[in-house]
Image (cartoon, rainbow, N blue to C red; front, top):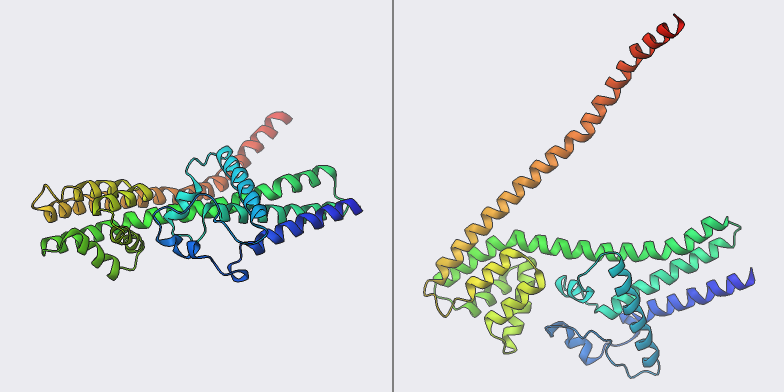
Length: 300
């Protein structure tokens, strides 16, 4: 009993330490951390710290990254976590995200270990110890995956309007860079947020086409990739605005077709509970005379 309590206390202390270490209010972020949102790709390794626990933090971060990547790979997640975090513009990098996952897993494991001291059956205790941390990991991964998918869907829905506005600005005589800056400054959606990062990359010296290609590769939406390929013809096509307008119409048609398909699919799903609600009473009504007939033949 005492050994279990000591082990639960140690696991709880380690989980609380990892959680408090990722809390920004306990320490002033360094200059590199403050400049990280303006960098095209956040560093995959934890940033160096000047505290005495830098080696321990680096070891814990590497352990959390390795464990999290292997677990997500076993669950069928092939996309890197750093890419998904950059897609949703999360302030966390991959190491801090994995550290939070590990902290929650340790906290759940400590709670499950403390619960097993109450005299639960062995099978239930093993299930709590093994399934609790895994469930916490799955919930955090599912939350990030849902946020990433929602961001992709929002970009796909906003893209026709953004493309039409971009075509209007190009036809009005704006250059591609100034048109992107205007859309980034006046927009409020997901595309506008991404365009702010694109314009930051342009201000860093990257060409407009290269910055747009980075955006399309990060988001992973097929209509955006086609639009970027059209915009790459800015030095060859004199009527770039007309081409962008045609691509916007094509994207809007595809979006309308997907919306109609989704509405039809949801309409079909509505009939499932209706069919079940209609078939169950009907089956009961049919079973009554059948059972009565079988009883009569059995008596005869």
